[in-house]
Image (tube, rainbow, N blue to C red):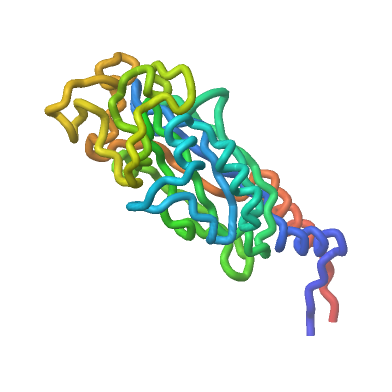
Length: 261
């Protein structure tokens, strides 16, 4: 009977790759010219129990700071202390994501670690008082299956998926509105509401009877995310190029193993 024998090196590489996985998170702002920006995306890999927000519930302090000021630090501290996550980070270009910007970040994960199984993200939509995008369901994006095999992710965020934190009145007054004139944190009028779908900017397609504010500025003339099929972003979670090359190399090296009877 014939059996295939891998070289010792190839066997070691493949055994390592079965647990460790170098993955790349890539985010692209798909908004049109003069469209919406996004703050650097917080992304985290976790057990499925790290819940960033819930529709119809009050926003946490961590979400409030991100959605009003684009500040991810409280959220990162919460994640680090939760004991529920394997890794997190901020995916960003040189500054905020402008229309057309793309940025990537690599994470070294262990697919067999239950704390690395699911993926979450949050980012403030700017300019705004407290608009943001994220996943309400902490288990919406499973990156590794229960056996540790890589699944990955590839999805789009539409304008209809923009949330309102319910923490600040959407008055769009420049000094209250991040990326529109706000000069200090927590500068807006407190709302005391609940997380809900964002109704759109003043004077938007969804609110035509209101006077324009943000949308009247030439820099944001294409930022009406309530327009049908308005694109916000695309997010992919894929094997890192180096990881794919390593696996390909290990496969080729193993193919040179010897057959024996």
